[in-house]
Image (cartoon, rainbow, N blue to C red; front, side, top):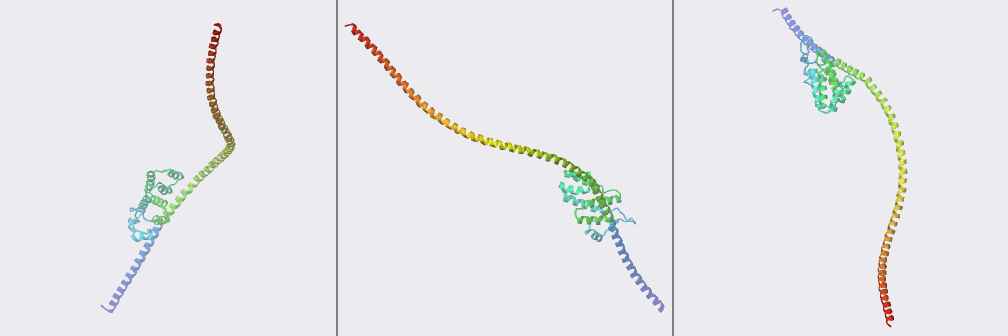
Length: 309
């Protein structure tokens, strides 16, 4: 090989090395751009809806959700699709609520789309019925991918109970579905405002009527209470007079009872004396009778003696 051939061979080697370097740089830059595009796509559209959703080339989108992507967007691994996140959220809600009616209502009521539905769910106190309705709501996240995406976004948005939950929901469903869910929730709540305003006005009117009637009733009762207090005062005064009179009469009765007792004692003494006197009188009468009989006998004796002379 001549010098020209050697120079050409060296030039080819150098060109090959340069080509490999450029190719490596191009591949690295392409990978960086690809990841950037994927990152932007995840920010806008979120994770794949489920394991069946495919990209433009027909490959499952979940295959592109690497651990690095999961950590960067979700802060943890184990979740590759929105469907998996929805299942995980449901487990968390069930574990936190249990059979507590208040906690089940706290989870369920934000999912209400009308004021009537919201009020009806507030009236339910059976935990089994509340869980049944919650199951129905989570079952709504089915159908075509587009519909499921919005349904999942609505469920995750409505059941987010902390800023951390909202941030995670945003990462899972993407900006587009998150904004749509927020707008839908705002529209639902806005549609409830006139209903509750009307209810408030009705309650206010009913309250005013009842309050007026109640005030009149209170005034009437106050007048009756005043009359009763006046009557009670008068009756108290009468009672006090009667009590004083009763006391005086009780004293009179006591005096009379003492007088009667003394009189009874005197009558008993007089009766005893009378009985004694009657006995003495009876004895005296008997003595007089006996004396009179003896006198009569003596007179007859004297007459007899006179006649016999």
